[in-house]
Image 1 (cartoon, helix red, strand yellow):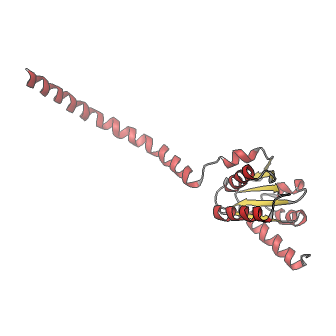
Image 2: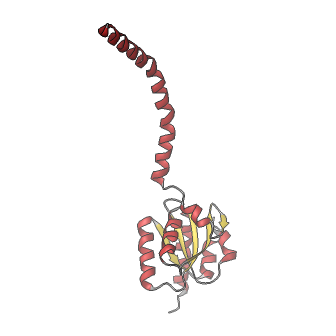
Image 3: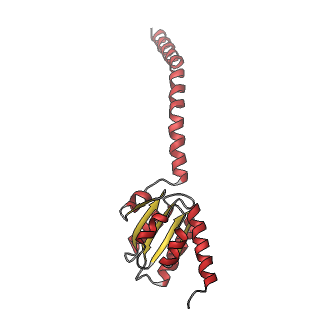
Length: 175
């Protein structure tokens, strides 16, 4: 069933709005995936905060124009699905990477982030970015280390004095 002009405009507006807010975008070829496999991919994407949409390339070019992902436009060929990370940059890459391990018919074609286009080899690098919680934990650890060292340094003279007094008491008791 063909889409009406109004439906096409709605799709373009929806994808364009999502692309404006997204942290990263991935275009993957989905030929050969069954409907159940596509539903499974959509479910995983929803759970991870990833917007997943199959869009005709002609409509995708219109939707991506004027967004940070306009760099994808010259490379859109064949049936593609688009995954946009809305919450963290690596979310879409992790979903696609994990799904490709189980279903080799899904083939990542384009990876874009920050207005820069990368090939499918960048998928693993983007997927390995820490999640928001992991990044915050790493930041907290880096911020906490100097304070802990300062506390240990300030406490060391008193601890040394206590150890010296304890050793002296033991020596007096054994004599």
